[in-house]
Length: 352
Image 1 (spheres, rainbow, N blue to C red):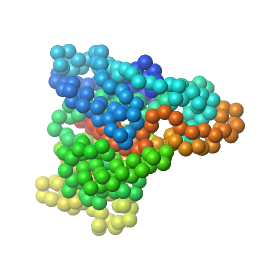
Image 2 (cartoon, rainbow, N blue to C red):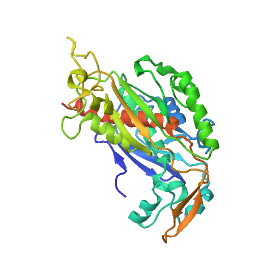
Image 3 (cartoon, one colour):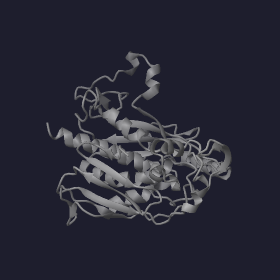
């Protein structure tokens, strides 16, 4: 299997399956002499881990990171940083009913056809549990970036949206509720909607908005390695992501150039920021902001028709512990992937 690594200079390779002994990764290219706050890394893991509230999967995993290499006396050494996260609460029997059949909108069918053999327990390598390793790398990337601040939050669940611009939101309130929405009244509606959907044995999608502040001018390469292109690839590599837009996004397609152009101030900043902090694939010093769309979780607790490995139509119902809405637990994953992209370009920029 190819495609297990992400990044050029700051590079992460992950390994492991949902119901294996452990998952983990190797981070290569992290600069030496970075004093790591290990508590901050574990806090990021706690934001992503299952079982943290009543509106997420009740699988209980401590998700404690064990570092194996690359750190000495609290500082990075510049050598590969190896780590593992043990799987402690597998219930593989919950997946015995899909050993010979394929869950709709999951990777079961394509994995079987591509590799001829699949780990059906929790989806194996295709499980979103793999993203825990990304959060470790992203937490370290954040500490490499220092002054650059990355904040993601739930901006919609189903048809419930925050109706305020991000500039009017207090990011310190993101962690104040289970849905990770910084607008309290909207958060209450979102949580109620997720609970309603869960009672129906169904799932629901949503969006995450990410805002990156204090980005210096000059990150990104102007042709194939545009900053927004790599951010897009990073976000679209996350399980359940169906869309990515930055700056004015698809709304910009409705505008005229005279409405959309970001006019300059004398200091090089712009009066508006419909460009989303990136022009020509290069950061311009303004806030970078983008939105990521997540589909409803594919496993639902309702009867559905599907096919088995012999092509027969069979009926199945989802079992086990699953998120009714993946969005709140995906917030730290979005931040992590953004941090890795920024760290990659930050290190590349230092080479010029």
